[in-house]
Length: 289
Image 1 (cartoon, rainbow, N blue to C red):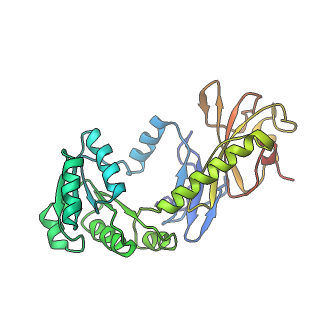
Image 2 (image 1 turned 60 degrees about the vertical axis):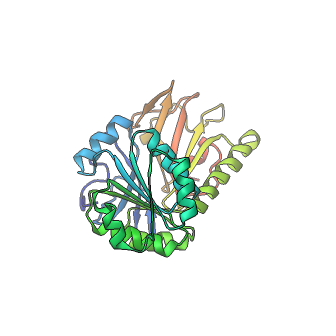
Image 3 (image 1 turned 90 degrees about the horizontal axis):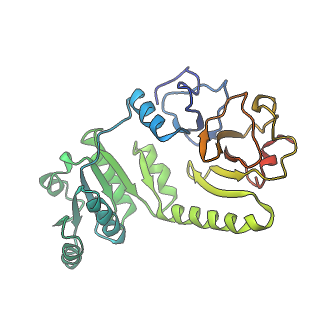
């Protein structure tokens, strides 16, 4: 981002709920100042996201042509999904037998037999013309190098890189890659959500949980029940909230509210909280001790 020295919420109704700066993650307050190179996470209604991305110059054209490099299971399922929405898919796989399988499994995709490290081959099959490139080989290092190569061809395309070693996620990000995903981290995130969901029936009002910023930030959805002492009916500006969290959204009667200082939490609401803290189990845990 390049909004250095500007407020953390440059657009009304679009709060910035987390900022990652190199190795640190912040839950920004009103006095927080963005710096060039910060990575931000925002909360907004879907139509508002499009407007903000357009305002910030981040809105990209629809992805119509996608190259998947590596022909494993992820490529198959992703290729099937992309073909199902009408995208033109090219899969590059070096194993000839797997190429034949993919030809039968994905008749609407173009399957190319070749080595992903052969940049001349990738050029011949049109990597420079793709709207999206996804590196899905079995080698983390190969995927990162391929992602860097695809990214060097121009910023117009979306580049996604898969790594299995979580330690290499930050390496890929330092190399300038915007989307570096770890299947192990995604799986761990799903398990954590399941475990937290199981605990709901015992002593927690957490209905949903997601992690981001490499697992350093949690987004929790609380169901506001009867235990609301010191929280419900009080304007948010008068609540003594913890410094390490942000009330990102209130969902009332199925409608999202991006809260301001005069809004209040009511029984029956669902409240989305973004935090770097651990152990939040009830809506009252948002208050400073």
